Length: 457
Ligand SMILES: Cc1cc2nc3c(=O)[nH]c(=O)nc-3n(C[C@H](O)[C@H](O)[C@H](O)COP(=O)(O)OP(=O)(O)OC[C@H]3O[C@@H](n4cnc5c(N)ncnc54)[C@H](O)[C@@H]3O)c2cc1C
Image 1 (cartoon, rainbow, N blue to C red):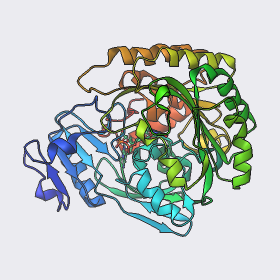
Image 2 (image 1 turned 90 degrees about the vertical axis):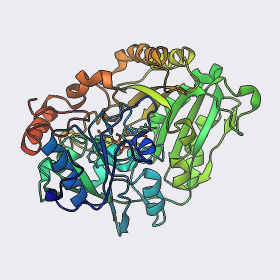
Image 3 (image 1 turned 180 degrees about the vertical axis):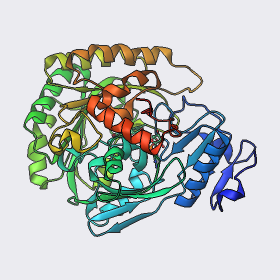
């Protein structure tokens, strides 16, 4: 097999092979536990490059992985011995009035910086170095989602390279069913080489931050959190975390390394309202730290980055949860008490608002009416450690939340050992529609290194 067949067209990007000096760095993905060695890394610059790479992979029958930001926890954006279509050189962002046109190698921090300069934002994830591409295609939940919907709800159009190398324009008029599928159906239908998003107004600064309490205060703190959540206006985004206090300057030395509960929020209404709305979170007890204040959106968006460094070995379990009560609080606290690694975390993110107002059949994303997203992230520093006890912790803790399950998990947080849950994550009617779409645009399942929707159903 040669590199790229010249008969396929002129490839303007770069091909890395295992002997190339940049290969070692380039093959790494965010999750340090994923250690795979693709035969080719095709660093693409244009949609035409992507088309050539796809046709090359199909012609030679090699597995094809597609990489945006590289944050897939099960490592779907790399493969052993196959071809990685690496979109990281495609970094263009254009803000055009109420729209942003974004290339697929862009990370949220890059997009947020560009849109914030225009007083606008697109709901994105809460760690700033996650890729726009994968996060949007699987749904995309973040601080602004209760006000402006999921990332995929803000996707207006896309350019897509399909399994036969065609380059399609997808929007409400051209291939509307594909647009529906790209809003939550993941990377199953092709490689998105351009996203067009709706932009939303954000104040500068907004009111946000987090308050941290010792674990002994977790019960009243989480009760206050759920009470605030129940009455919250759409403009209030909320997340709670139980974790080990890091050796950060804002944590007193005596509390570093202890288990704590952090209540975090971001409010996109007037500052004085944000202060009032978050008061019940900040006055539960004497906090270890109170980091609330006026801040730019980009600061809120990167506030917890330090908790998810690239290279961390990681395994996650998640579940959409239905009505929340004290039993959920007990399960959260038990999970925190039993944590096996200081780099593991328990997260409870509040849904509702604009997310719930989108009709369930309007996009491929399910679970519009779930009240919260539970995520159990097992993290450990040594990627050569298989991390069995940390994975077991996540699975055991997750089992305890089953009574509150809204019926499934989140495509973007699924682990490799949960592939039997993909259909459930979509529900029967959405699944049938997605399978039809897959049959039409990828009948040979070229794009199967993802949360796969097989053309056979
Ligand atoms: C630290 C961390 C924090 C996270 N925080 C959040 C959060 O706040 N909210 C949230 O909703 N999710 C969050 N996630 C989950 C995240 O949404 C998924 O991991 C997502 O897949 C990451 O996208 P990516 O482009 O970085 O990943 P990649 O690993 O590059 O890709 C992930 C998947 O998307 C496909 N894909 C990527 N680019 C394209 C493309 N251009 N066209 C077609 N398919 C493509 C790939 O094939 C792969 O299956 C987080 C994950 C991590 C690791």
